[in-house]
Length: 438
Ligand code: ASP
Image 1 (cartoon, rainbow, N blue to C red):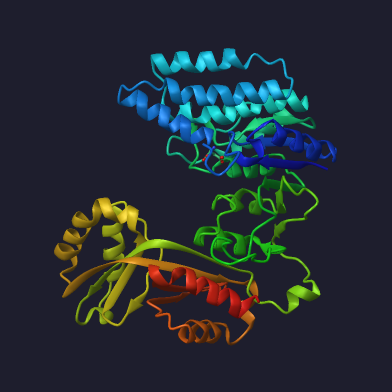
Image 2: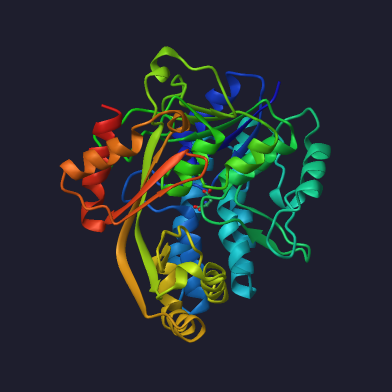
């Protein structure tokens, strides 16, 4: 039996959190492989080490002294080492890093050092071998993971033993450090679990699983006890904040259950995610698993008389988005009109070139860009077998006088998406939560 555990930034924030982790690991001999994040926030106004390292890099780039910021990194790791009573010469590691900062270090290598330092200390504290991510997590030149090589290398290193692995980074074919996107230690953990054919991937964070709605909007939302991989993918893509949205893929490929747990409440079973499971009596009555959403989308809409009867328009428009490197999240269409919905921050730098190209290539009667759209996803694996979900959504929002700007249902009937104005976003989430969960 093997459990791969990943501990996020708040779980790694100080020595007290390291102690909780040690208790969790020691309570179960199958908890043998531990992936860690950089130290995160200890309290709400605190800094995350990774953010400080990004800031150091920006200072180096603009020729401004980084000393004050790097001191905060230094102090944090030295105090963790001291408070745990470890002998490790972490100052030597920090000096090597500082020397590299003075003589040229890539941004990716610099920001990866938080995970590196966390893992060194955690390995010492647990008495497990430190296995650097650069020894096994290999990227292709295009930035995708070389899964075959990475998996076989990690298997040959760990075998049946124990390991502490830093999350968030790996090695490029040219020997340079490359990082995953922010929050990427979740992915490192999932890749390690898949490489080692773990029985469970436990992702330890500071909440007891995925909540049915954003707790900043809904008071005390319920926890999702169990969800399928597809539901997790939908919820995290749509804005649920617990895990990196790409975490699900490696574990799903190997059918490894994913258990989201709380380091500060280790007895809580959290959320279990797998391919399928038998329903409990409580689950039988509920057909919405969760509600997630995000703000700051823009819709680019073109109208052209007769467009519905001609071919290639969707492809042409998508190609123009592609040329401008603007990702398309949703594509609501009407008769003679197509909308492409994308994150506003991704559209903004390309808006003029994109709309200009649309005008030249597609010769539409009009082009309209609408900002300030929020998209809410109502997700549930059982919606496919029920009538009335869409009706209930529209009734609830209608009664609350919330105007629906856009509607879309995924073809697998796993989610219904509604677009609303920013100003209505929080209210819409509350209204939907009350309609389906309360
Ligand atoms: N430390 C990195 C970040 O803050 C990666 C992670 O914690 O997963 O994004």
